[in-house]
Length: 131
View 1 (tube, rainbow, N blue to C red):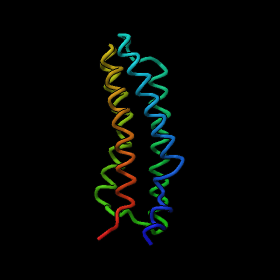
View 2 (tube, one colour):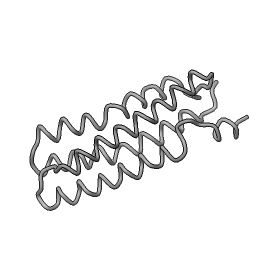
View 3 (cartoon, rainbow, N blue to C red):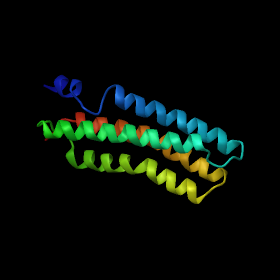
View 4 (cartoon, one colour):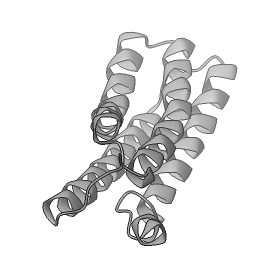
């Protein structure tokens, strides 16, 4: 039963991998901009929007699985991570717009480095054995 839960995890697979890769690519882009003393550019903001769409799709996949009767191993932590994930890119957007200097790019970089960690924790809380 454990292997079935891991194999059928709605927050694992190509969508999760794509959001992690996109987030890391965006983090590198923002880091380079910050090191070059550049404020956030259009690519960074478009990247945040695409990342948000990916995270929303991941959230919808989890909600569909919940509607189908599947349950995460650690529901409280799982829902906390879901809420955090959904709000990370908008938070980066707002803070970077408030700080139109190199530090805005650094903010985007930092939040994009946190995002993959939260995705992995989301996966771990789904796959954890309950009770």
